[in-house]
Amino acid sequence: MNSKKNVQELKKKIQELESKLKDPSVYNTPEKLKQVSQEYNQAKDKLRNIEGMKELEKRIKSTKGMIENEEDPDMIKMAEKELEQLQAQKQNLEQKIRKEKHQDAELDKKNVIMEIRAGAGGDESTLFAKDLFRMYSRFAEEKGWKCKIINSHPTDIGGFKEIIFEVQGKGAYALLKNESGVHRVQRVPETEKSGRVHTSASSVVVLPKAKPVDIKINPKDLKIDTFRSSGPGGQNLQKNDTAVRITHQPTNTVVACQDERSQPQNKEKALEILRSRLLAEKQRKKREKREEKRLSHIKSGDRSEKIRTYNFPQNRLTDHRINKSWHNLEAILEGNLNNVVEKLREIELNELKD
Image (cartoon, rainbow, N blue to C red; front, side, top):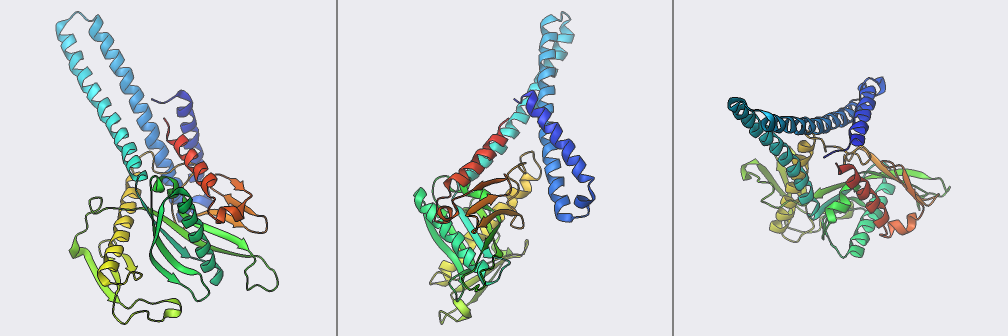
């Protein structure tokens, strides 16, 4: 199942991670410690599976040889029973690996809910959030996908404090899932008279859109509030309480939706987002318990992790996870994102190979 080279590379990676865990700059920083520990556990689990399969295959071969060469009927009977047990263990391990890979493949087929939020940088970060939304929506259009806004909080200057939207299309999650994280922009804002370059950031979260069958929610766990929808500056857009806020009390997950015209429509959209967030969290916890929890190059989709810089003065986009830059920033922001996402997908698929 796995080559000798893969095992050697895995052992080398484990040694490197063990060294990092002893580094004061890592174990004194909770976020770094958590990340390195998770990568270490992932690598150890993967190696354990590889070596476990190798050992099972070795014992099966030895037991078969014993059955062929043994003359004592009692010994043959014992060996046959042991062989049956070993083959069952091998089948269970293979089933486990196939099931995990199948679950990932099924997730890749799902539609996407994307959440973009302005971060550090004030008004400039809200404008950058708008630019990111335009980039993804135009990319979706190029792919023949449908893009629909679910909820948004626009600003007076034309940006977004937050925008949540759905992308519908074949392979949407497979290509967009690696966009999760902090996106940083370096440019001269339109309001900057001195021409000084500012740095600001927006976070992107990519969720596989969950169906009711994927996540079952007990209605008793929900706290539902209604309020009037608001636009830029906080002014009320409607006289009635059409906006909906849902709190999933067991996880304290809060979702609000106000863009639809009626309360039932906003409630349904809010539930869609809630299900998708809960599904993403469920998958995250699963990945922590198995070997494919975190890739070595394309790391987590944690919204707190800086993954990319958009440098306008140098017309450069850099993805920090794979240490690669592209020098056609303007075209990328207009939706020509395919080379970037395909490169990330290629690396991901290579790392998932045995």
